[in-house]
Image (cartoon, rainbow, N blue to C red; front, side, top):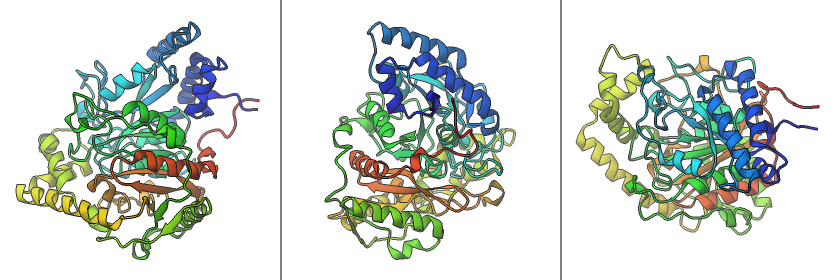
Length: 469
């Protein structure tokens, strides 16, 4: 029998804490022990707030036992990507140039977590300034993808540490951000579930920006239900973020179990399958067959563009990133990742004309995509073209985002979840793309998949396979 609470998903932890079968203190001790054992190799955390987190767990335990629980998530720990501010704490943004940068504010997402009694366990590693998809960091170190115990592989970026921490059961769930794939890439390669939210659904106040036009916070966990629970408490208007105005919270839990019967789900066009690994396509086709068996209708659509077109549409991202951090990139004495420096400096050559033309073309493509998806509930793709690759094989001049970037540029939402393993034992992943502000539908489809499979329950080989007697 397994008695290690760190191996339980967050919704089970919530149930057990509420029933007094589990103490927040015992949970915290288990997670801290797990971090002490595994993180020296995995390198998921920038900082672990062990004394404060354990004190908070003790306070949560007393509050719950005295009948003063703040909600169903009281006492459950969470990790934050290290671009999210907590007043008085260092926010490095993944940059060695910011090792002494203490935040002067607390992000709205953190305030909402704490208001529910959740406990911030620590900060996780990120690609420098959240600017990169592979998950690598030259000066702060690259987290180790736990699905290969012997060979370092791409953890996915930029929310690399969050993906590794959740996959390795160092924390039940974590927050990331997604400007071009940065929640979905690490979630896919680390074999967990991740939600890219629509712009304006979750406040970005207090989160270090990369591209304010495209930045979105996202939730990362092992199950769809956990992702939905976390999303539910974070979404909604924030007076400190004007992009959230006019977007009331939409409760996703009532529709989570409705299944997929009667839904029309579009498959990846045949020409877009080129360049996707055979084992990834095999898992993808198996997912389509599963959903069809559950009552969904799988249909074809004609995309008005090639997905590869979006990878080169960097005028928005790099133009805004240069505006925000170009001064650091132009300082030769600044300790900056060589690849990130080149990316930031590339923004210097983007003219106002090119930037505005890209924004206009983006609006046109939104209309074209809406027309292509008429009568379709969601668009399904593999999350990535390959499983995680060896770090030594990475070509930093390329970006592994062809199947994801369009979601950001078209202001859609998307859920990724594990859907199999390749011959090397590395996870593959399914991406469920919905129109903007239809997170509830994406989660509903994902929940149907996870209820019919157990891919999300597998443990990576870089951690022990069993705990307890």
